[in-house]
Length: 325
Ligand SMILES: Cc1cc2nc3c(=O)[nH]c(=O)nc-3n(C[C@H](O)[C@H](O)[C@H](O)COP(=O)(O)OP(=O)(O)OC[C@H]3O[C@@H](n4cnc5c(N)ncnc54)[C@H](O)[C@@H]3O)c2cc1C
Image 1 (cartoon, rainbow, N blue to C red):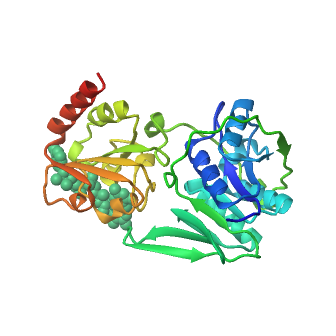
Image 2 (cartoon, rainbow, N blue to C red):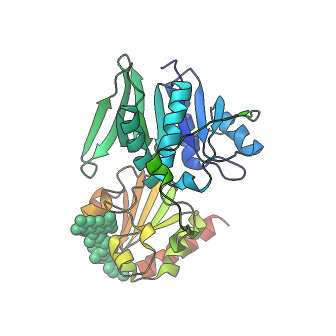
């Protein structure tokens, strides 16, 4: 175990940290006996701050980036400022679209290492080791990050660790962090930001359960939602479903879409092309419903149903309702 601080970029809503942030804090807490420094990019409510502490944070730095918090370059500047202020052994961010880009930029600015899509982190006598799956999950690679240099910046995939219930804790005192933006960061302005159609359920990248719509659903989003809603699942899609305009592009899972690692992945009429399955490498249990028994998705599925989604899904939904009384 390390005894030096670990810096974690966290996000909170009104009352709590996001599930991905709780995972990062859990990971950091397991890596070090030293401080776990939470860096927030907006003011944090007392209840969210207490939960940050409950998940393992010992200090809370707040860099107020306002609307720039959703742009990678200013976030990288905030990470660099926090590193210079606190001297951590490592920096953890969530491996999503913004986190990966910010991690790369921050590592470049710090002259340190960067690994994205990290599935597992451990400490051995030589320092930190980060593991990830590559080549559509056919290889697991581990990078040794050494010690003594600038802290490595690690983008950790959501869904990689189980988060225990938070301990009861007092809110942390927020420590303001001054961030001076580089001219190139200050030059980028946020013009608009809106919630997309696909984002009406849980966040796709960090959801514990995901139901994915493929071509076999023939665009019946109601059918997909009829299963997703009782499961509290996020809705994802294949590229074909997005190309057809059945659902917003932001729902695309795969090589050119979002990478997901839910505990439960359920596919409806998805063939299992490698471009799609490369985005679900970290998934726990894979359940596939497809009318073609030869579909490649069945090669990686833990449970498979060969059948028509229009017949199987309603039966599944009513069985779920029956089991829940
Ligand atoms: C460079 C590149 C990048 C790509 N990136 C991505 C990516 O990020 N994500 C992605 O998803 N794809 C991506 N693709 C596309 C990918 O190769 C596949 O074409 C796509 O994933 C297939 O989508 P699908 O499974 O919905 O459709 P199909 O492959 O057409 O499969 C449809 C499935 O539905 C089944 N079916 C049909 N009717 C029913 C029914 N009534 N009930 C049950 N099952 C039924 C069929 O048996 C079939 O297995 C990429 C391709 C390229 C070249």
